[in-house]
Structure formats: C-alpha cells, structure tokens
Length: 255
Ligand code: 0WD
Image 1: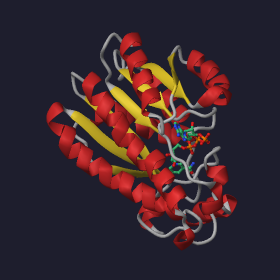
Image 2: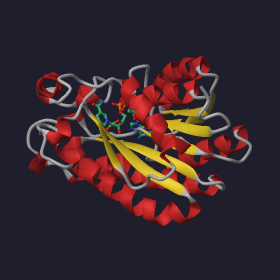
Image 3: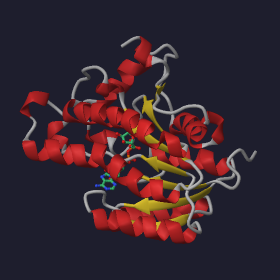
Image 4: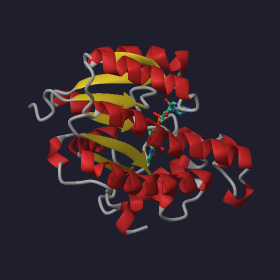
C-alpha cells in the first residue's frame, strides 16, 4: 500500500487514541504519508507524543487556535520539518462550553457563542490561510462536521450553528483556493464516543438512536471515518472539492 507515499500532512486535533483525527492519521500513515501533529496544552502533549511516535510522525508543538501566535509557530515548525512543502491538512477541532451543550439553544450566551464560533469555525479558515502558503503544489484540506449543522439535534445547540458556518466556509474556501489546486472538504461523521463528545448532553442516547435508526443499523468507528478521510486527503479524491461527505452509517437519509 502506498497511495500517499511522498505526501506530507499536518494533523490538528488529536486528543487521545479515541480521537477521530487519530483514525484519519492512521489511515494516511498506512498509505505511506509522512505526518506532523500539533497538540493543545501539556496534558494532551503526553498523549500525542507516543501516538505520533507510533506512526513515525513529527510533533510540531502546542497550538491553541484562539492564539494566532501558536498557529504561526506550529506552521513555522511544519515548514521546517517538511522542507517547506505541505500536501494535506486535517482540522479536527471544536469546542463549546459543556453547560450550553444541553438545554435550549436560545439561551446561548454571547461569550460562548463567540468562542464556539472562533474555535469550531473560524480556526479552519485561519489555518487554511497558513496552509495555502505551504501548498505550493496543490493540496487538500479536510475538516469534521456533524449532522446537527443541517437539522435540529437535541443538545447540539450552538455547536450546530457553528458547524453550519463551518460547512459554508468549506464551500467558500473551495472556490477561493481551487485555482491553486487546493481542495477543501468536510466529513460529516456519525456520533462516536470521544473526549469532545462526552461534553454533549445525553450522548449515549444519541448513539443508541443512531444505532437503531441508521440504514446500517450501527454506529461508525474512527477507522471507518479514517479511511474516508484518507480518500479526501489523497489524490483518490482529486476531482472533489467543496463537498460535505456523510460517514454516518447512512443516518442522514433517515433523520
Ligand atoms: O461524535 C463525534 N465525536 C463527532 C465529532 C461527530 C461529528 C463530528 N465531530 C467532530 C468534532 O466536532 C470535532 O470537530 O470531529 C472533530 C474531532 O472531534 P473528536 O475526535 O470527537 O474529539 P476529541 O478527540 O476530543 O478531539 C477534539 C480536540 C480537542 O480535544 P478536547 O476534548 O480536549 O477539547 O479538538 C482540540 C482538542 O485537542 N481543540 C483545540 N485545539 C486547538 N485549540 C482547541 C483549541 N482552542 N479546542 C479544542
């Protein structure tokens, strides 16, 4: 196997071995890609370093997307370790205050609305600005979204609004960057029990609901999202941009 041989990619959003970003990183590594990882804070650094080592990857430093200086720093380091060229980038980052991932959307505070939008939507654009400079030979950018962007889902609230904006930004950036042969896509993943998901109210109920009602009668795994992610980050999807692709056991045709 080696569809991604010679490709260099930056992976942002691994928290631990249950992270969707880790599933995608593994799939890219299996196809021969060379990877670099960021982490958010010291606690996650302890988790990310051994995972990066497992796939022979680089660790390019701490990145908190609310601090532009840390974004610049990890891109400077990425440029260094990859010899100036980047082929693909994964953005698997989102955040909202737990207290607002339950109850009513309408009660969202301005502070958490702004913060959720910044971390879950704008950060992808901020990162694309840096990636564009390194993607001198074309490239592929991928982010993660959820069905709550399209339809009301219980407890998803402000995150649904942020994901809707993120999906719109995928289309705008696809148009902006297409002439440089930089593609921009999103995977809309079904619910998976990760650290971030544990903040969402009644998440176990959502998992059960999807298991009973999706066409495949089950939930998806990070390895399944990983394989689909590898497709988007590789040349297999070279004719595809601006796409929101569901990897959700088919739930979106039902719900
Ligand atoms: O059911 C799910 N798990 C789904 C997740 C279904 C559909 C989509 N997604 C999305 C999420 O919204 C997110 O965009 O997938 C993406 C990855 O999420 P994940 O794999 O579910 O969650 P996790 O393993 O927790 O990774 C997300 C990470 C953060 O982890 P924590 O749990 O510590 O918030 O995003 C990173 C952080 O590492 N992150 C940040 N990175 C840089 N700067 C920041 C930040 N300010 N905030 C969060």
